[in-house]
Image 1: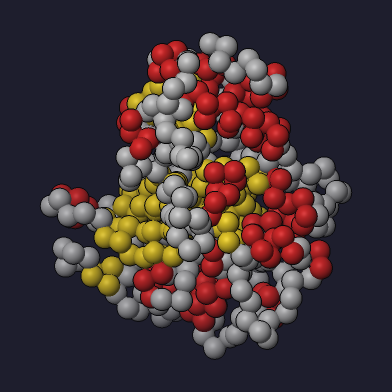
Image 2: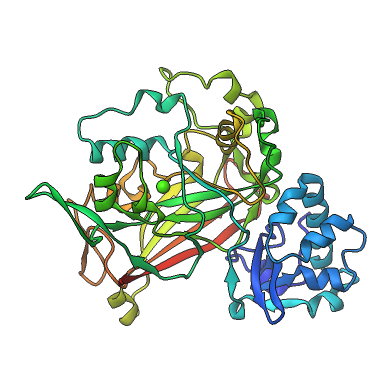
Length: 431
Ligand code: CA
């Protein structure tokens, strides 16, 4: 039978944060940043719980990690600690809890809280793990060229920039950079015109590995702390000029936005699905990337939605337009495969490192996770409800990502919907 929380808003059928979710985030409090769990429209202050002695039955390292200003220490501890803390917080928030009165005073309304990045991100890697996006982007950037030979053998990625990662709600400045002038075939330094979003999922690394000690595929799951939404803002005109031969650089490092809540691997358990079904002619993953358990349960069924609202839409009270709806299960590589591959040369991952999935697209037009694909590199404009046309983002446009998992054929009928909250950012113009 389903446990119910005494927090009323946690059983609103539309909430992203029922008792079954309990994602972690970091919010500003008067005495500095605090770690909290989202529950309904409230945040449970975990440091306050620790100070009140409510976590005393847990390992002292877990209690200490709850008092930190970022999630890295908790991420480092690993699954046994994560489970024990989740179990205790669930107990505190469940209807009938003997500590309800005490815990009630430690809730902070989410609406008044200012969120921060959940962890100190030491390193950020962005993969390219969605076959549909890789195929479409390849065709649009290099017409006529097929998917690279390596794509179905090696999870491709590049080392991104951690310093410019920001929490949802931070305005995005239109970057300046080198853009090729087609008429003269020479570049000029100008404000980006083809500003785009990329709808991705970020994975926060748990304990990680020592330098020189790869994580075997069979152990990779235990290094997944949790997932968040990620917007890899992209300057397409700069990207096209700079990306050969070393890959993207300043067209991506302008800024990357993250949703403030990290949904844990444990909360996602009911929504696990088989790994992407490869075409009959595709190669099998090399042995170090193959495990039967990962093939069977390596996928995660998360619906991802992209909404767009222009300044005019906001001014006239028009709701944001849903541009696309895709699913994280459409990743050619599982998160475990990305993690194992990343460490396969001995490279170390550390607690709080972040792995971006790459843009998540499906096969239908309304499942394409970036405007590059949706407008076919800006050649096919689409209309907003106000009649405005869009090819790429204009100043004042706000991009909103939402993610959620629902009961369905993959999750049991008794699975409770959980969500990721939002990742939003508004284009503020060029400096
Ligand atoms: Ca990307």
